[in-house]
Length: 154
Image 1: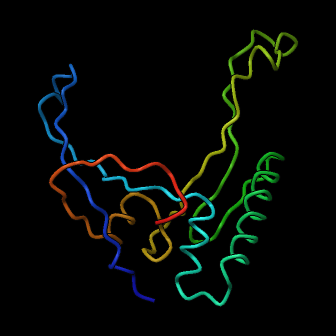
Image 2: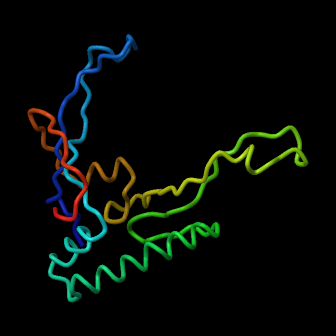
Image 3: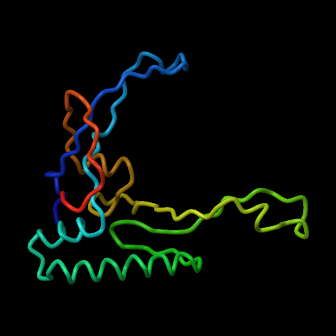
């Protein structure tokens, strides 16, 4: 299967105004963000691609997948979705002087649900930054417009 080169990502240029002398005054590319999709919007989008499954079936599967991913990752089991990547947990923790002085409430600051994109040298499967760049067409837009609030359409 050939790489889909019909994927277009829009970007704009933004001048850096920070106090960092190495960056200040230079222009950097930024992705133009569009309206996001919630789960129902994503399911509607999937169903619109001529799927054999109706929108309600896709929605049911996605909602079950979401709850199962949360359940498994909460138990410490990474979940790999081939061709997309892996969801896994990580912990933000402070150090304690010794094991017996370690207290959950005091030393654990948070738990994160993280995502690692699929990697590899095959451009069909890889979503790492360099391979993803090869899969898309970048199109410059003149100015940045703030995306609308997250919604179901798109």
